[in-house]
Image (cartoon, rainbow, N blue to C red; front, side, top):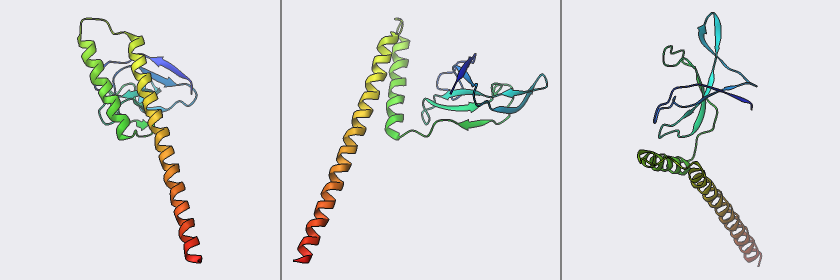
Length: 149
């Protein structure tokens, strides 16, 4: 998917704040008309507690015209992912309230660590699932052998 940056407003915790992008390969259009032309929708990121970091298509003129264009791009997140991202938002807000400038590399490292932790949890859960499935099959085989005897 190819994106082109479009200037947008900022809004802390807003579902329609921050940087906006256009989808150049699969453009979507609003019902709004600017200068007689259809308005190209933009891709925005939700930062609400319920959908943190989730991208969606929306109208670039949502503050002045409410055409109602809204379509999620990303699938819903798990509760665990929402909790982790919301905790990171709180940490970021606390850090940004300090007078010191934010260290981008440090923030990236924190997010990378969270991603790695989620991957490790996923792998552990897959291993547990395989183990339980194997144990279940073995127990069925033992019961079948016992029933035959």
